[in-house]
Every structure is written in C-alpha cells, then in structure tokens.
Length: 127
Image 1: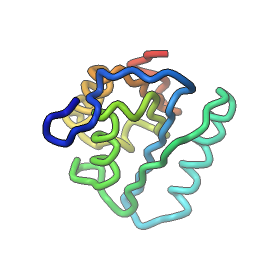
Image 2 (image 1 turned 60 degrees about the vertical axis):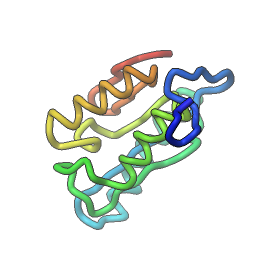
Image 3 (image 1 turned 135 degrees about the horizontal axis):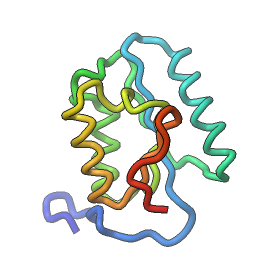
Image 4 (image 1 turned 90 degrees about the vertical axis):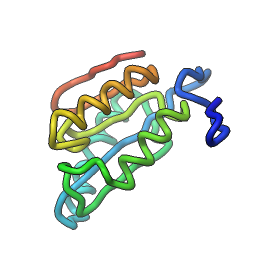
C-alpha cells in the first residue's frame, strides 16, 4: 500500500482476465492519426482475445518530454497495480529519448506488467 495516496503498490497481484490498456500519442493535433493507432492496437488485442479497460491519450504533445498527462496517468496506474498489459503502436509513442523510454521499461519490469509494441514486439513479458 502506498502511504502517500493509500492505493495498492505495483507488487499487488490481480486474479481474473488481464487488465489491458493502450497508450497513443501524436505530436500534431491529429485525431485521425490517434484513431488509426488505436484501430491497429484494438485489432491486435482482439486477435489475442483481450479487452481494454482504459485508453491513455496525449494529442499534440511531443515525445521529447515525459511531462504528458496521459503518460503520467498511465505510469501512476501501473504503480498502483491497476494494469497488467500496456499496448503501444511503437515504442517511440512512449518517448523519443532513450532515457525516458528506459525509465518506463524499468517501471514496467518492476511492476510485473507486460509491454506490447505492435512494431517491435513484446518486452517485459509477464504472461
């Protein structure tokens, strides 16, 4: 339990179907690009029999900064033990620099979450 916010920490376990989330980002304000990313992710998830519990979106925000509301909510929910699988179209949707991407991957590993990229495959597989 997190003493600061009274929520479960990422070492909590979950029984039941996997809680799958998606993260989509586009640097330009372009709803069509976000919708296309989401459609590809939903198609792949459907092939695996997964259903989404939440979609995190950052529209019009650069991947050069980790200060993005959707990404920050996703990280918080991973730490809270609310996410089993994160799906992205490509890793560069999470971040454009190696340091922020590496930090995200360490979080995913520490919290026993599976990260799935349609372009690069699966990392931190916990399934």
